[in-house]
Length: 513
Ligand SMILES: Cc1cc2nc3c(=O)[nH]c(=O)nc-3n(C[C@H](O)[C@H](O)[C@H](O)COP(=O)(O)OP(=O)(O)OC[C@H]3O[C@@H](n4cnc5c(N)ncnc54)[C@H](O)[C@@H]3O)c2cc1C
Ligand SMILES: *[C@@H]1O[C@H](CO)[C@@H](O)[C@H](O)[C@H]1NC(C)=O
Ligand SMILES: *[C@@H]1O[C@H](CO)[C@@H](O)[C@H](O)[C@H]1NC(C)=O
Ligand SMILES: *[C@@H]1O[C@H](CO)[C@@H](O)[C@H](O)[C@H]1NC(C)=O
Ligand SMILES: *[C@@H]1O[C@H](CO)[C@@H](O)[C@H](O)[C@H]1NC(C)=O
Ligand SMILES: *[C@@H]1O[C@H](CO)[C@@H](O)[C@H](O)[C@H]1NC(C)=O
Ligand SMILES: *[C@@H]1O[C@H](CO)[C@@H](O)[C@H](O)[C@H]1NC(C)=O
Image (cartoon, rainbow, N blue to C red; front, side):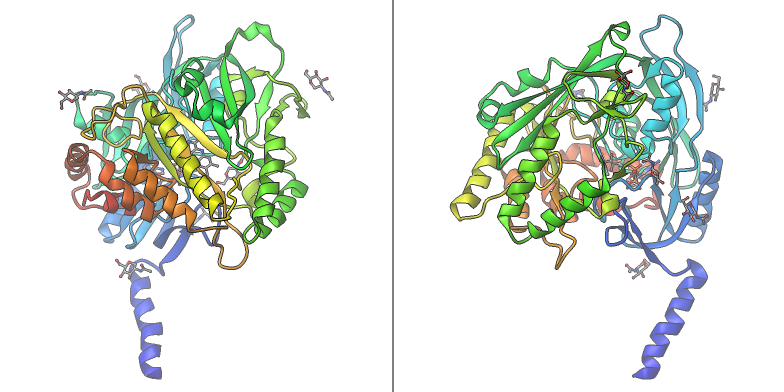
């Protein structure tokens, strides 16, 4: 027995390490305990596009799979397959080239490497009087990772899928060769590359549409739940450049946030938004309260009350001197107001050990009222059993929207065989919830969350966000996807990566292998 164990412990790992080194877990932005991949043999810090291509060739030679790694801003263990994988980090591949926005033109373009983040590009563009408009996600996230996974902001009026801003992509295929592909809706290669899930290869360079920089305002109202559930939801979102709701289910309130352009010379204010940074006191207080909410509904009710109060005030500082802005509307430069970043003296909430789980599904916006009312009946059903549910996230339940954008696997595509009307756009139900740091880490009334997901997936033609759902939710959701889109995607995947070098759990669940 002992000899057998020694054999297992010493010989086998040695054999593996000769080929790939010992495999280890890789983590999301949340850090240890939050794996994105289980079987990583190597993390390679690439320094250029050509360097990434060579690294792919070397990994293929060694018989390993490959995935790109951006900023780790995802939630679940779905980045890789469960087989040996080399991760190629794009963080140090961040050149920006060929800026072009002629005087007086309504749009232009810029080319940059995959690892460029939203705030890096925003700073570069702002210094040259330009912005990316509304095709945004968040500050410290790479464009490569966002386009790969179909990430988006919230708008029915403007394109807000990041991919919708892309004019061309350079992709390193499964042989380590760089392929250039231009926007062309008649070409399935483009329609697959537009939301590729990283399965065609590493997005290495992006040519993106840009616009003259603008100032914008941000305004927020508080609405009763019934005003939204029974209201003209489309009419409350579509007029604005970008708009969303935050739902507070225990308080039965919504925040309605909306943004639009103002003349640049109309205001001197330079508002800078913060969605994720908190002070040490706030972070530690929230963690203590939310951990007790693992067992006590009253703690979650109190947390929702406190978060609602904080979120009612502008989450903006004046950029020039970091002072709090107290009144709506807030004005400032496009990127600073729409996204912003961290305040200089604060840290993101996860640095105080505040972590979440999430779920995001997209529905035809024509079903918005029906969907939200269905969620309400599910909350009420818990209540009738004596369990009060509350939002345990600092900004409530995020309700976003998406203008239709055609590709094969995007959340807001249309013309699908489900027969649903996606032509008016989509509403996304994005439900982050606190993951306790204590005990088994299960949430308060844990069983509610899968029940909610399964009910929505079974009753509505909804589609998953590709980095905000667990393996289980993705597996349930596949039945709602268009089989013809999946077939066409698989055909392109076989052209770019016939040997499945870039295979991931998401791709496996979709059945494109
Ligand atoms: C705080 C926070 C806020 C967020 N806000 C939004 C939001 O508003 N809207 C939204 O839609 N999403 C949002 N997200 C999700 C986020 O946009 C996606 O998870 C995105 O894929 C993360 O990009 P990343 O650079 O961090 O990549 P990673 O997390 O490192 O990778 C994500 C996936 O993309 C693949 N990938 C990364 N780079 C490339 C590349 N160059 N080529 C091919 N594949 C690649 C990886 O292999 C992996 O499968 C948010 C996430 C967090 C944590
Ligand atoms: C790669 O970069 C990361 C982040 O800067 C660093 O922590 C890591 O040590 C680097 N890896 C190597 C092998 O240099
Ligand atoms: C890692 O991948 C290898 C090769 O596919 C496999 O033999 C091994 O079981 C995997 N290990 C884990 C922890 O999944
Ligand atoms: C920049 O533009 C030049 C001229 O059109 C072109 O040759 C070059 O490839 C472009 N660079 C990138 C990184 O796209
Ligand atoms: C962005 O993320 C990196 C880790 O990838 C971190 O070191 C850095 O502090 C972050 N920057 C900001 C401004 O959040
Ligand atoms: C910060 O800047 C704003 C805008 O310029 C100004 O109105 C405000 O008085 C400043 N506050 C402090 C404390 O300097
Ligand atoms: C929508 O589907 C029809 C029938 O399959 C097809 O002819 C048409 O080109 C599709 N439209 C788009 C935008 O793909």
